[in-house]
Length: 195
Length: 195
Image 1 (tube, rainbow over the protein chains, first blue to last red):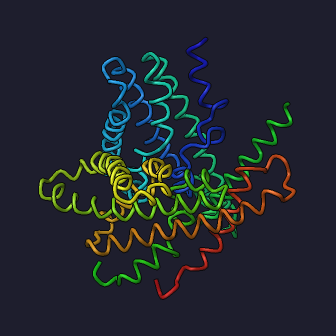
Image 2: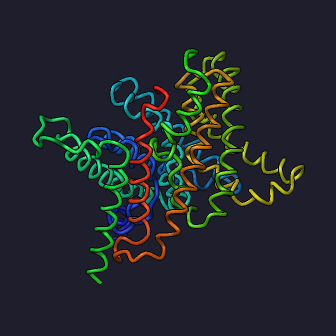
Image 3: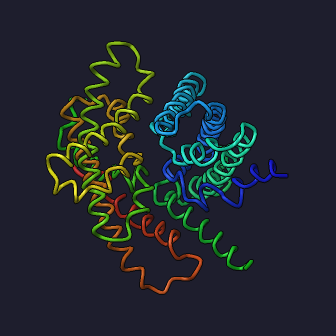
């Protein structure tokens, strides 16, 4: 039961994006289409779970004083792997995500989970926690990606268009801010109503 | 890249590709510290200072060591470590030699390390293949763009504190709407000076 809790925690109750407001930059920057959003989400969950697992595995040998630089090196190793893997197998996706792939290094969600959870908990728990947090991130980024692509381009995952005269503004930067503002507002309204 | 003038690089970084409103970088600090005018000003000064120096240092590092040694794949790990230690060094230097500047920037310097805009500029000048002087001008333009955006944003946000806003939209959702409108306004700079 405790295991299940550390998994579901990140998906809903402590959703890293909507509740903790972490990792905004990639969330808004690459959610202009659903495909980009999904690619970013998968890259993030890959780096997040592997680095949390490794941090948890090495937590007994990492000295407390220099733990942050060590976390950063572990994270940046996995980011480099993800970067080169995408460049080799998905070049168009790699091009459209651009500088935001190396920037996964400074995604606050990953360092925050390494520091706040993986450094203090067992291997299985850390893995499940990272997986839950990663799924929470994917859920939000893909939702925003789908909303923006449908309203701004009239397509989903690049399929043939079904809305004519879409509002192009949703694909441009202002659309990202509007979408997340409305999502958070709806979440707040729903929470207040349940109380 | 020679045909792009220094002025063009500067204006493009400052207004057209404004780092916050158009490129979505450095959002955590943007939304985090923009509640008071003095705090925003202090943060922007720290960003200008650190970004200009760190992009110059990473340029030298990349072109003098990583490229000749054929180890470009280490750039993610190198840049993040260099920037983190550079901030520490700058803090020590200021404390020792320019104490009044240290007192003004003091608490903001460590926060700058986690500002993804700093790291992004380091990757972007590599992507754009800028020469040294172009890199410095670019970093200056980006950080001044950060300053312009955060000062305007803080001004609007302070005024809206006293406005009658529906309960669920208070706080972050409103902040996102303000950012959306500002970003819409900055979209108007597209095409300025034929850029």
